[in-house]
Image 1: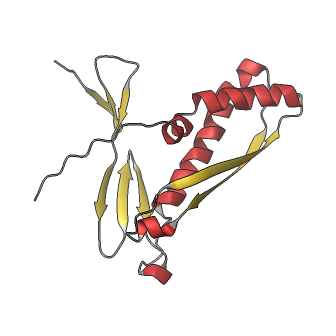
Image 2 (image 1 turned 120 degrees about the vertical axis):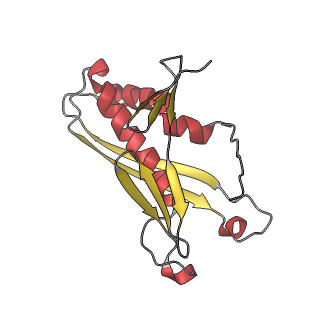
Length: 160
């Protein structure tokens, strides 16, 4: 028997260390996808040049933004472990996709490579300390781990 406690979109099972994040999304008119995330709304869309209305970022752009966000949040959360006064960070993430995969051709549709450039403002930390922090961040960033590993995806389909 699994007992769930629902807290603002977070589902906690019997093991309190395992959290299930629940996102509800719907495809609306055109290519617009609206996602409800806790008390936030995120709109994704295609650019006008390919038939969308450009009302939001592409899903691929959100993935890169999620990775950048994860890097920043994990660094801020753990900087004290390294005695680093982390004033701020600039995080630039870019990735290369072959759009032919999205268009239906038989090539890898996902990112071939993702690159992050991180500029750290921490006056009290040496480059070595900053490097240690960023290595720790790479080891503990859930988004980076998910992108880099082969996380199983299970899809359930129901006809309305």
